[in-house]
Length: 302
Picture 1 (cartoon, helix red, strand yellow):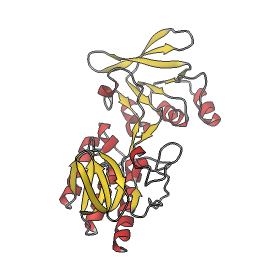
Picture 2 (cartoon, one colour):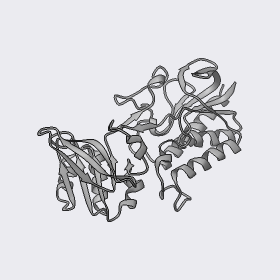
Picture 3 (cartoon, helix red, strand yellow):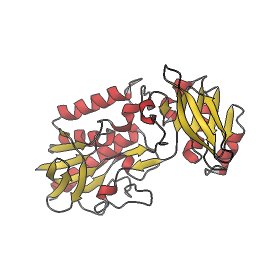
Picture 4 (cartoon, one colour):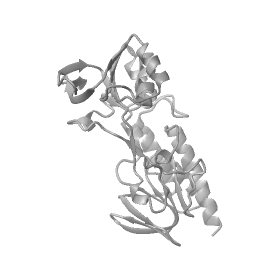
């Protein structure tokens, strides 16, 4: 029996664990994949407060060590269900655990293209965040896949520092805002390819070297040589298993405000799994602190 169970070992979940432990609560953290979450795929991060430069993996290791040094317990398993009650039960593939409060911090994974060996190049040729990784491609050639607001914003940011930016959109037009479309089309170093899908990653023998693309209208295939590719085709939140206790919006995100508190007493959500505009390490950590303190207040009121 624990005071708080945290589902997810990314920046939101681990920050929540640190804050809850410092408030004197017993904490158990579940993580089904890699502690640190999506940040572990970034080879170099320069926008985390307190670190001029650090790898995502090193940051994740420090954050995990901090939570454990504060006394948080950690389990590598998959949470399958939350059963509301007093106490609440979290059903996992390793058994059922009980707690007075639960914080869901499952994050959101980037939607992938579904091409062969794609995951092998994540963090080593394939990126998802121009703010995080764009500086590594200064003066180089990059491709951006997608046609919504996120992809257009990524391409605009990259066009300021990269020598050449290819924008690959599978539809016949962009789906993002007209203002962003207009700004992008005015960029002389941006080449837009509509009705285009990525078929294959090209490898020079020393790593990512570009992509093979196909025009869906003509069927013509072309090789584009590039130093990196930014995939911006959406995020997939990891909340489906908990929709019985957390309200979800149309996109599957926890439909909670900045308080991180939902309609089910004692159930909270924090980080990228929550409906929000900005998804960065700093905002995830902020959610973790808010959710943890809210959970502590809830427990103290029992």
